[in-house]
Length: 173
Image (tube, rainbow, N blue to C red; front, side, top):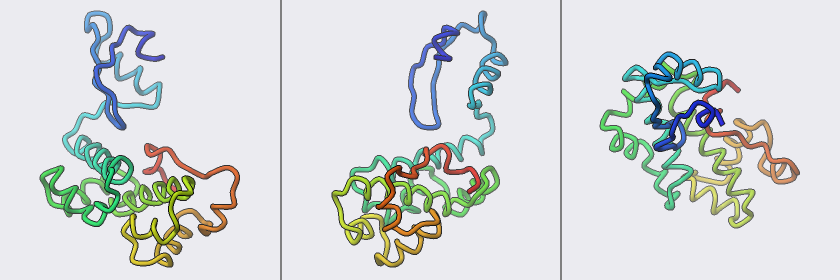
């Protein structure tokens, strides 16, 4: 692994974040940044970039890690409380640094969670619509088709699921 090869100790790791420890005499800050870039990662420097990463982490917590999926009902309140700034400020900063709006990023995350729930075969589509804060199965189905290019039924029939890594959700479609 990249870190072990260069005697870098991982102190903490979670989506979009890693805290490391290294001997600065052996590896300078520039070399660390170079190693990260060579491996598809980067150091977040600006305050706005840090905010964008916190937003992504919060959306992930809310949609993918929360035991209470229904909390999505208050997604904007959750983000406002978590980041201590207005939703409008967050949305503006997010759009400035990513290729999509914050709302679209949230929708893409919801669609990925819906795929996971469909794959689990534990819930009906009506239950999933309710859990994911859709007013109807039809609304969920329409948004699913718009985002994935296939109907829920077509998705269910697929042998290989068309899931995306959460980190890839800000890439252009």
